[in-house]
Image 1: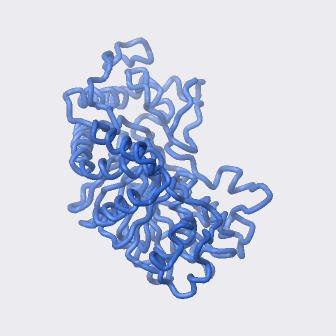
Image 2 (image 1 turned 180 degrees about the vertical axis):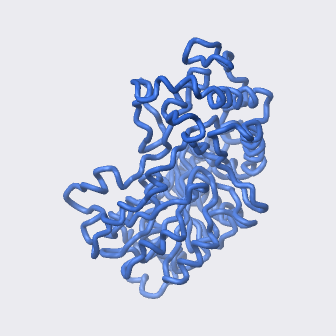
Image 3 (image 1 turned 120 degrees about the horizontal axis):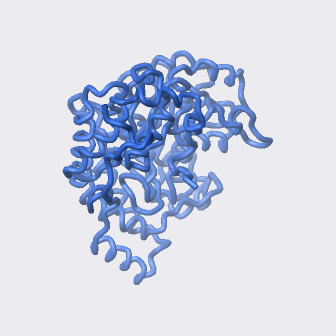
Length: 438
């Protein structure tokens, strides 16, 4: 039995990580030259480079149309507007996700209805959509959570049955595939963040994709005043709003981000193939280790894209009842300082959703007691997840990081005396993935 480092044993990881193991995004002189060209030609606030990036991104995803936004949050809200969400309409969404997946609905006067997630994919459950759907349900927000594709076949079938528009938030899964189709292209409309922390990182930007020209027209008109004209928009009845953003906001992208995006797109699939190889090597090394379930897809034709914010699924019942919080503390002692429990805390537990302030909020225009539905989210409330290294290259050290997790899991009985103690009392959830360690 190896003595755990948290109890005074020798840590598994003692050396600094090698170059390339965690480096991301990869910027080169080509990215720098693209940005400098925007600066030197004073095109930061233009749209020509953005439109070129949009066309390339749409072709890559496999959609007819794409449009850029200044951030992912606005691209999601534009998708909701395009879907027709308004006062009293309902958006069905998972509670275990980043807040921007749903908060835009409140700005449109719509009501957020939370449904449960699948215990293996951690994505929206098609069966639970059936439980919560109501007469005012209009759209479904599918989040490909932590890079894992949602069960789109089942979700699209339920959506068709109830005439719901499916929005894909693929901010965690850019470039991934579901049964041979790019994630983001399967629903009626998709939106993603391209901020600096994502696998497709351009600085601060969002992108929306769709095959539906009517949805595209509404998304353009929402916050692109300079494109709200007949050159871009052909939807009947939209012409009377030409010239001003119908959403009252400006979504234009700083073209330095678009320029970076064009360069990054050229190499994205090649570079993320290295990530997928490294992450699968990590989980292969943990095969058979009790308590630690890989959160990855193995179905032919599907993958995890850039594997943003990778996590595993934790089973305390296989590890002597040791909590995920305590397990992660022990892994940190073994030398990987970024192991934390919880993933995104369920949104329905935040006061913004369960005790909302005055003004536009989740319940302002609700036509039924949607908050009562929150009491039946057992997987959302019960699943334990833990962060793992986001590895970028298949280097020998990958095995060492896996060994740190395996050591703690295989010697978890040493932690039993500390169950319920102070080291076991940390908050096991976060509203976003930047952990304050001070």
